[in-house]
Image 1 (spheres, rainbow, N blue to C red):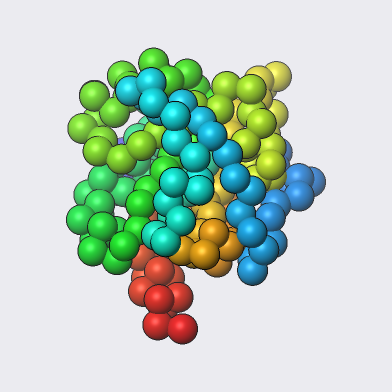
Image 2: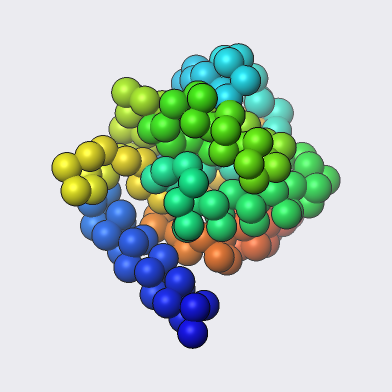
Length: 177
């Protein structure tokens, strides 16, 4: 019963988040991914160009410590070795602070980088900002970026429970072509 409730809640929350982000312009597949420089939970700065030559899973999520976002992050962590084997890095982005990301990573044992975008600049460039009850949050979207720095695939309004497996599957397909 709890699983059904959680699935329903996550599904409804995702629907609300997607509706809030529908009118924004996202970068197109085949076009260069917008570069950025954001602060991580450890205080260092990360730029997209730092990962040229690698696949990048750039995922936007609403908020640290919430059920759907925690599930999504745990699944990426669970599959981290598979991403590393595929030559891919995972970068999570939300409007939370670097300190919040540091605390979230420590609590959940996350070994990939979460990036703070408190002014929503990068989230806006990627068409991934939404209004939720009068507050701005990052919309649950993911961009798979090729080693050449181009958008290879876009996922909108993802389902946290199955998202990591889908990205891994698509990454394997894209690497074949």
